Amino acid sequence: MEMTDSSQEKYQEVTKKAARSMGWNYLSFGLGKILNIATISILAHLLAPEYFGLVALATLTIDYLSVLNELGLGSALIQRQQNINESANIVFTINFVAGIVLTIITFILAPYAAVFFKEPQVTSILRWLSLTFFISSFGSVHSILLQREFNFRKKIVPELGNTIVKAIISISLALAGFGVWSLVIGQLIGTSVASILFWILLPWWPKFSWDATIGKELFKYGFSIMGNNALSVWDQNFDYFIIGLIYTPAALGVYTLAYRLPQALVLSILWTMTSVLFPTFSALQDQKDALNKSFFSVLRYVQLLVTPLCLGMFIAADPLIRVLFGEQWVDAIPILRVLSLYTWVVSFGYHIGDIYKAIGRPDILTKMSIPIFFIRILLLWIGAQYSLVGVGIAHLVAAIISSALRYFIASRILKIRFRDVIKELTAFICGAVMAAFTIPALYFTKNSIAINQLFVVVIAGAIGYLGTVWLIERNSVMSILRMIGLKRSET
Image 1 (tube, one colour):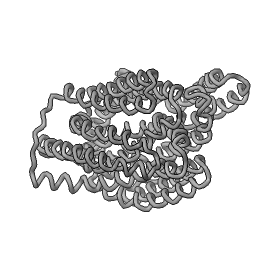
Image 2 (image 1 turned 45 degrees about the vertical axis):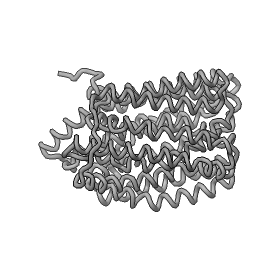
Image 3 (image 1 turned 90 degrees about the vertical axis):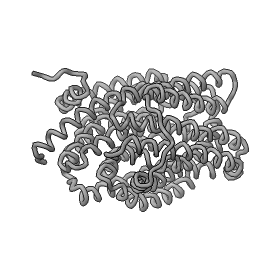
Image 4 (image 1 turned 90 degrees about the horizontal axis):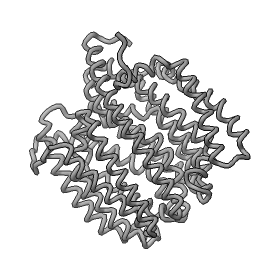
């Protein structure tokens, strides 16, 4: 794919800036996820599965209502090229009002949610968690502005602050015997700390203001994003919804914990990359060739990063669950295997949506999401009638259909060709070699204790995968290291 000189120059400038931002984002991601997984591991040994299930039920209600929290205006602010300060003030005003309104609505709806799920404790848990709407509204625009300017070096501090404080509070309260409230209080205090840190790190003092013209433009873009977000929230949380109705809180807790690893290690990578890629693609929105080239580069690097994580969780699910969470969570092992494949399939077409948003066509995402939404819900309902593993299989089938549809539409609108996609999937070769190393290692250590088995499998997988990456993708690795500043450019 040939680019003009101006496109090439713009592409290199934006790519270098995005890569450095991605480096900070991955530092935040890596440290945050290590802390997060360590915290979950400790809490899983201290708390019963039903506690995680009860919080999941309350969080489900929060997630559904959160669609109305910013009305898609955060994405509109990132994509916008004019009147940035005035637009930021308007978004802050709307977010602040929405935070108060949603806190009140959630407080009122809490008893009805408890009746619906047949769990009385949900009322008090949900009422306390409703405060997160109000608390997070204070720092939301500060976070958006840092993201818009690729200032992830500062953005890392509130995110890690949230994770660290939440971990300390939750574990301390769990040790003191607070049970389910250790999870609730930890989340509230962590969110509060993050909002405070955003204000300290970004000396931007918002004003309550409104401008009809700017507001109309923001809402026009934001409503399409909100529509897609609404479908995504229902789509991504319907499994918790149906499990909460059919099964016990303990079963929901097992499923929630099984989902935590793919979510923390894979889906969070995709979310983290989106926070950089959306403003990156937005900066290239008028350079079609550069935009497409950026997408193929992203696809290549995403698969190099995600493939070993997904295959590793699939192969080593048994010792992984036993070591991290304990014997009381062994029912999560088959669920983790299926969900690891699901998240792998999701990663293939995940960032196509960022391009549609960048070029000002978020409506494509909404139109594409509607049929997938109903297909996934139908499959999840059917799968839930059989088992928790059936829910995971439903996710996997829906993800395959969704990814196929995303690439079909991209081939028509963005002129992305399937053979060009295949060329970027060299991670498959690395993954095959990794499997050839890890499966025998798993078999020959089957009589060992779980921690020894996990150690041997991880070492074998690392040797197989990293060795193959170094042989066939050395230039790509060196290129990305140079862009993020970890390796000096050759002169």
